[in-house]
Length: 65
Image 1: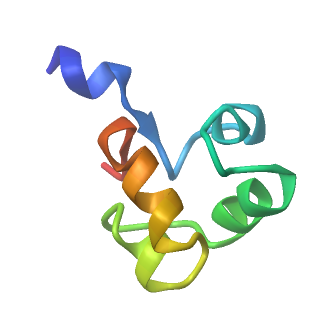
Image 2: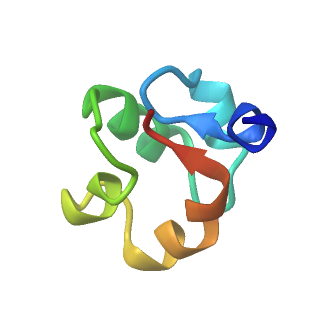
């Protein structure tokens, strides 16, 4: 449970939280917010919101629970 607390939830994260990730700027953060809700983290890649290279960098730090 403690590891989940440290993950950033794609469904509730602020724009500033999202922008703190490498490869996520203002435009991608807004795209993530606009695409909510997510049922799993892979959706930000499969729905082409972020490229696979960015997804690979941030996937261990995000959740969609």
